[in-house]
Image 1: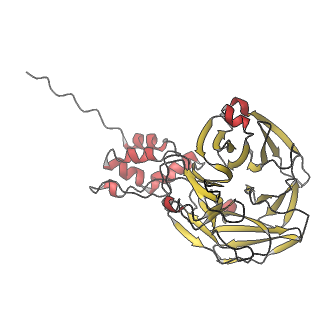
Image 2: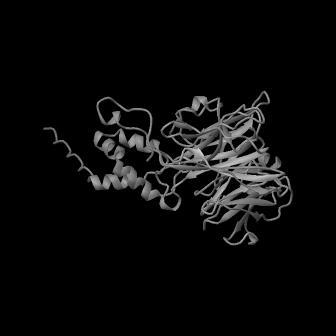
Image 3: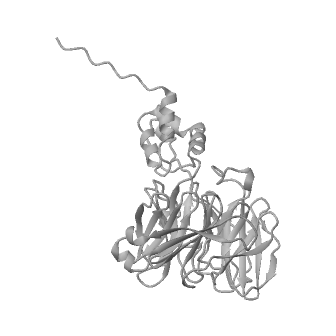
Length: 408
């Protein structure tokens, strides 16, 4: 006589299932997809708005889903690429008509690089645009190929929804310029899920004759009147991405001795002295510190130097907080090539270092090093940070899983 079948294990309580799923790492959204395919009940749970809201609130800091960089192609052209870091595909990741704003001005092509199994929905189009900045779930793009002296064409792109908003033309009245994008709700928003809300764009143009700033509000759908100040003998550095500290944006300058500070509330400009470094031509990256202050990272003689500045008047001093020995972290061929710092991911403490045509990320908390891509002349790295949950509607029915995604 055959033994009776073993009893089925009891099902986990729905509350326990949700608590387990909520603790999946946000930088690997593919894990949630796999969990959703276990059964329709889990699928409905994961795709529900309540789960997505709790997921954001629990993890707080959006993960890096990818980054855009500017490099040089095999035929010598300046190109761009998007590298995903998670299971997401952006529709425009291979676009050939838009340019990332952090790159040099001229004939360039943008490339967005995802950092995991993430593929932007437009990955096939990334070579047609250039990312200038990315913050609060949006990417600021520049249309490439504009002749010098013509109007500047900018657009705001949401990689999650694949929505692109082209902005009104901006007359070019300065030889060098940079721009930053951010949520316009400022302190009233936790920035966990505001990628479809109102935004603000800050444009800074400069030459030896002076500096001007104007802003674009998505609510007003128009550029503001520009404010100007006489020249200081320096210009905005298009390779240095801005840093958002409290209610102020900081932009790097070409001579690298100062940074331009723009107060978002008072709309006033001021200049902040930067710490001295060993060589005027070293690449520098403005950062945010763990206590939400202004930071600066640079490389010299196979070492990473990290500085911080407390909030205060423009002449507030800097403190050198840390020195990282790259000889202990990078391969010997990278160390021999004199590494440069080319980017920083806000909120997660990750810097980008390039050497010998290889781009690495370094986690400042753990000193973990990861090789993320290869390419010649890599500069202007713009990380993309956002929560992401792939669309699961069809997977919750008998139709099978669907493509696409939504913000988590």
